[in-house]
Length: 327
Image (cartoon, rainbow, N blue to C red; front, side):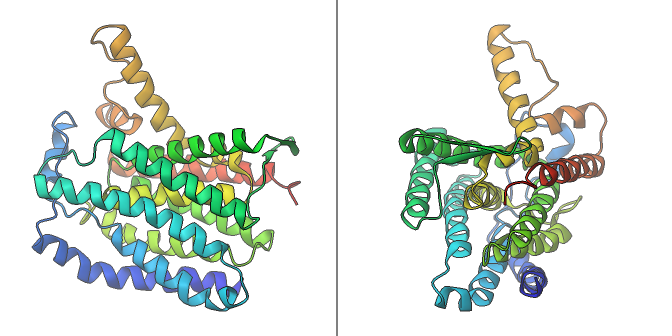
């Protein structure tokens, strides 16, 4: 437990320090965010805010996990490192996407097909590695009813790849206003840290604890009005982290209550697109995803961050009660 707390503190300090140097450098590189033309009109003032700020918590958490987990790795325990490296792959995909946006000065980077193929490949490699290391089972655990069923390995891998890619993109959708994805994912990381500690899943707690500390520091720069955005570099990394932890703890279905905000954002986007096509141009929401609809309904960014984080906290507490019989 002491090492876990230390991981959060060290990552917080490192990320805070990295941010002091990174943000000015991003400004010099003119790595400014391009704003959606169809977005809320008041978002136009955010144009030019440095993006790719997620680099700071990626490095902060990474250094912390590697240094504090060194002793565990010498003993042959690499789970925390696998989860970090998996999330890092998604972060790299996001970095390429962000870099292309910055170079081309528009809000489009990699194509949807390119992102999907890269994300699917990363998911398959991670799942195969976890299975090879004996860290992944094909037994699907159902929270709340404390039941487990064994699934055919091939079907399980298809299911797992679908969940991972879906989770990564859901977190990416949530990153639409200052501090939202940061605060919601901070709560999710605290949940995973507590669960990993309670179940003594050493050394896994190091990663969510370090990321929670890094996100707390990043929020200092990312709360409204944001001094930097995490970009796809940060949001895809976070999506990979959330998904990987669900499978590393062998309970992917817990991502449903824990990630309720991510799901709501994604479903709202799906409904909007489907309704638009069915009605030949009409909109179900004022704008999708959900946080933009609420913005246009009069909610401030600070209110959205507070309410969505509170909902996530309540759902995480409920999820924790739902897995009491897991071990």
